[in-house]
Image 1 (cartoon, rainbow, N blue to C red):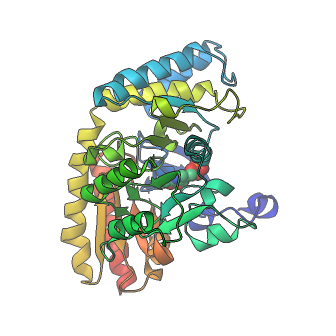
Image 2: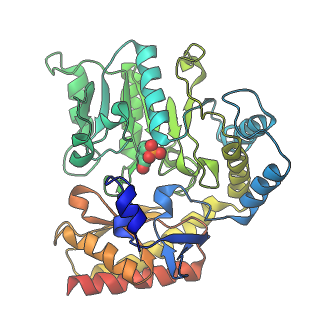
Length: 414
Ligand SMILES: Cc1ncc(COP(=O)(O)O)c(C=O)c1O
């Protein structure tokens, strides 16, 4: 059944090993195999499908665009499509939040926006070091991989991953703010002043670790006090995932740079952006270049996605559904074993098996798949079961998926 994949596709393939089926169709929060078997999607292509698979409003905009023979790819030339995206993003997202960012269209994947942010921060501050956090995931190219903490990913680099100092995240066990301040203030700490501090406000791949508002504000203050650029990586938890369009809104802070990708294109087509405060916009023309920085389908999808987000008040929907998930887990899943714990916000939740046996989380993924549910693991030893449906998931499908989670967790714990 998988002959051609096993014969021809590189061994680096990974998700297909957890979901051994050939997928064909998808609609909102459901995916279908070539034989028509239905799977509820609690992964949302790692946060790329916030507005659902084949969202009809976004699809319509893309189909109209294709039917009219517009230019599809244009490097970074001016196009009507990019103009419309930038205007919509500014009018519907940035201005209402009083955010004054310039927008850099990067190469098409998240890691490229992270690379751009690193380069630009270093160029601005004329310093090479960056501070990142234990548990971070920022991408797989060498600059972003240097910020990424999981061992398997780092071992793939083949060269030393330099210029990064890691600090514990807001995990409750250590006072990482005090530690960070000490590193920056102590003239014998051995840590040079960095160009930037980069963080996810919710570590997704790191195990659904939700930083507290106070912690985020403290990091903002440390950056301001020490002339360090604060970069928020909103690639996975932006676009409404946390209950606000940008994940940092809940802390009422303004990062100096923000990296976005995944759901920013609305339709699941590749796109990545770096947002920066205007005074940081000092790249010379073509200093961070790339062919696919002008994919017009992504701009069309992005424009339609933003309109969809605003028109349907998805932020409010996320908060409503978050409480359904929260209550369900606390009422139905945590009582299955007192050693289970859960963390989450918006539509990203994790059930932590670390105190029992981290391997159980992956067992749940396999069981879930057999029961028609796509789930993923995250965190230390892959011990956290991650729940991350499209934001548009219907209530009954969400309920059905949660019932499967309960069933499979109960089975794995026996
Ligand atoms: C927080 C975060 N940053 C960066 C990336 C890298 O994005 P990409 O895989 O598109 O390069 C990811 C991907 O999962 C991510 O979750």
